[in-house]
Amino acid sequence: MESLNAFISRLTEIVWGLPMIILLMGGGIFLTVQLGFFQFRHLPHILKHTFGKMLSKNHAPGTVTPFQATASALASTMGAANIVGVPVAIALGGPGAVFWMWIVALIGMATKYSEVVLGLKYREKNTQGEYVGGPMYYIRKGLGWKKTASFFAFALMIEVAASTMVQANSIATSIEGSFGISPMLTGLMVMVVVAIVIFGGVKVIGRVTEKLIPFMVMIYLIGAVIVLAYNVADIPNAVLLIFQHAITPISAAGGFAGAGVAAAIRWGLARGLYSNEAGMGTAPIVHSAAQNNHPAKQGFWGVFEVFVDTLVVCTTTALVVITSGAWQDVTSDDAANMVTHAFSTVFGETAAGAIISIVLMLFVISTIMVLVYYGDKQAEFLFGTRISNVMKCIYTIAILIGSVGGLQFIWQFLDLILAMVIVPNMIALVFLSKQIRAVTDDYFQPHTQQRKESM
Image (cartoon, rainbow, N blue to C red; front, side, top):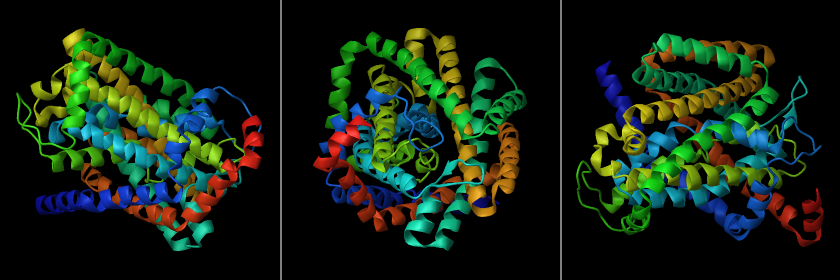
């Protein structure tokens, strides 16, 4: 068993090294060029029609509002990657890794936009009258690759089970450490909360996440801003370190072991790709249910997701870790606790632990809700709604199993299965890129622009 674990670990390290970076970054650059660098040229327009229309109502075809769909997708991306992944990138790649996370975000905007556009373009109604879509639909309908679509759906359905257990275990362990509550009790609580929401369908998930996501992000950002205000004099130097060491090595200091440029690039790209989930094919599954009359308009919300996840929340985390000195005070082996250490310099250890644990708990619960929805839709695509309801029950039970650390041998396959999900999705995006460009051009054509803005 140990040799098998070592083999899987090594294989995962290889796959999620250069090959995955080339696939996701290369695909994102290709789409950026194909779309004429639209995420840069039209960013003010995109932000106007996302930030500026969060509370807008419309009567376009769909099941949930555009913001509810976006909040649900953000619920999947906002989580441990923002609070734990960023410090890990800095611990192993230095402050320069943050610069490469920004590059990933800027490129990933085109990828996420493309996924959402295709999700809307090829969505359809299920037997319950709800709009459904995602990579499995645009691979099957857009390319005619039925077996590939089924492979994607099956791989993601299995990946959700493993991911749900990992997420549940992370919060159960954190709550036990901070409040002494047993993992079993935490697992039961999370299981009940998630079950109540997910069995209500995408409309209930949308209503919950549109309130929960802004609330939990604000809790975290308020705490982070207080820490930054306490260390405001160090912010300019922190920004300088990020840019300077994106292209130059940084020597060891304190608990930081030092890092070369290659490490900064490798960890910045890897953590950035993992955080915003651009290219994973998950976001379009929930965006496909949005009330929108043009795929490009919903695609803007995909850009918004990446903007908020990486350029706002991840950047805030990075500045907190760097300005507080946590990146030097805490060793790389304990990098997951850097944010808690940074918060403790202002709030004290007990309060800091409580704040981060509560935020992580909210992040994880919202993440699990949406993960189960993703898995549910894969089962529906493959086997119909009856089996999809069975899978909801299986995922719900997986929460309890994961919280107490059960079936850990399955967890080690998580990243490998995720790679199996990403590969067909990225290939499909490249092959369907001309269609994405056509949808984009249709929206931005001068003679239709006035009509679009008035909708």
